[in-house]
Image (cartoon, rainbow, N blue to C red):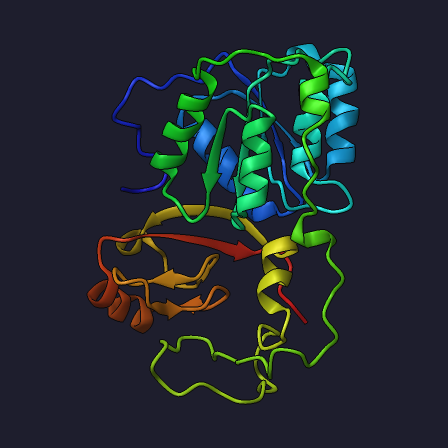
Length: 275
């Protein structure tokens, strides 16, 4: 399925105002792609819970659904959910649908979210179609609002983003993957001078957080040469084929079509190539 293809269902978000809260542009773009595939016309963004609270204090009554990442610092999505449910935001109805979107599922966080009456979970990686269905089901989920004191008593869960960073060197040396290499071929041990910067240990987080634009999902056969892989690509058995950040050159795309044909991949273009 190519980008922008209509959904084969009756999902209609055209009258729903969304607030997407995530400190990672990659996931914000993914959520926006999903809701716009469902005909959404009004999507607001916040890169932190603090910014989201400012928006909700001003526009809370106009927001119909909140999609939020739970793993953020200094305050995560569960606390935003708690504030909504406990009526701590005067202009935001406590029954506002809230969906947790995350790439880091955590058992304690899931349990806490359920006690806070979260409307749904969207755990990446998942297809745009699955995300649309998850959002639609969450919005229409039937549930009973409890007393604010019940929600206030739910124990908090510290997101990984708030945990102290490990000292450099822990976990062994970072692997460096040259552009165009498939897992199973030679992997360089040191970055090359001609490499664009993805060889750094924090390269994946770096480009996901700040450097790609026009991030989108599409079939491998629809990818244009020169696009940048925005997400690790796995084969059907779950084995890693390509690391995110790889430039998809013509020869590589041809090989991928044979190795992982029919898959949906996430790609983008550099907004500001790493130095």
